[in-house]
Image (tube, rainbow over all chains, first blue to last red; front, side, top):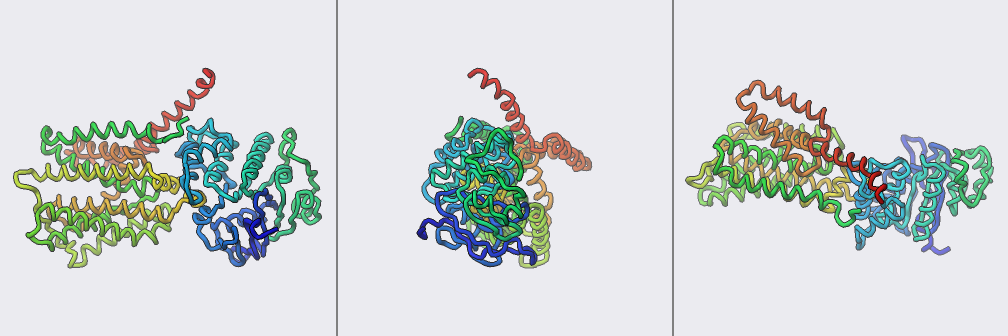
Length: 257
Length: 334
């Protein structure tokens, strides 16, 4: 593994909220071109970690590097321009704009360099399969399509790394499978993905590697199969072992672990 | 699917209405009474102010409740500079020099204020601006050099044989058109889309790479600079003014009101809003001075209840709803 393979790394990442540690000495290395999962019970610190990486919150100690460059003191705008995009846990479309305009804003800004705004926008809409809704106001979309819009807007910024915060929240089994396929397509296009997901089947089937945090501490890291059978993970989070299959089963709903 | 430029179609009626309106306004002073000339002059001033306000308040969502601050700064910078320039200068030379100075001074003040103030969001920014406008009004009244208490006389720059009302009518018309063109240019630019994303959700905008800090500051500087230029012109049109006649809370409120009634964030909204309000308060209720504030208040309540998105916003929503309802039919035809 060469240095160039590491797209994102964190050392000793710690965040305290009025003295209480939300994240303690988290270490991570994300390799280019793969899908990573980040799991843990509610309040474990998953979204906080994403907030630290994207510059919404300052670190108390430690460092975060993107392509070898320290980003932990940078403003969110600059971090995005370097090539990190993020979709939010709660889809936040720009309500007064159409679907097309929503995605176009991502294309107009985002990573530096030459851009063909219309081409990027159309491409992002096609990738997420919401082309047909381009001219609708964002408010007219269903939950499933809002999730896709959230993703389309993020990838229109032309990221190297996508942090997806619960992209499958609120989706049914078919929609979840569709979303996972979109994520796989993005990975095949060279975008590294790190996703937070509560749907265990989904995250196990799509991830190449998984981090588990609990109460702000990393308790496990490894292949989906290893993580699923790790006793500390089972104790902290899963409750019962999850059968790891090749892909999520669209017929059986999306049981919350 | 309209992928080329989603805004072209919405621009077209705007251009047509503007062209026809402009033509009518150009010849109006030859036809209408002096009273109407004064009413229209006030209308153009109000449009200029409301559209300038909208560049910050309408586009980026940062509502200023104290934009009259910059009318005052413009008027006093222009008035004091005019007295300093003396009689060697040509009238138009004085006017343009003062307008430039008033605009630059307002823009610079906005630049200084923007950095700390635009960290405040929503109502906090609005109130901070309201307070600053009051503070500046007090300063202008109490610092003798500024002359706010005694009042300032502006030089008579109206060409001979021209009625002052007609002269200022055309000046306010030209400024209104220029400001409208600037606003239109901004709205459909990358900068304009950035401002819209800030208004809709500033945190998401940051994550999409929108330079939110820089854009907000730029919008405020442009918005306040334009109001400053109008302030100079307004001061000149008064001939004599004191601090209370230019630092007027009702100016600040009207800028918001005209946008609110017409449709916040749109280009035509402030024009429609200013048109309705000026016509009602000056023409319809002009002789009922005691009642007009009350009726204005009632009217605002009715419009806000019936059309919370403003007149244009409500029309736009109607059209969208109708299009959505039609959608299934289109699929059937295929």
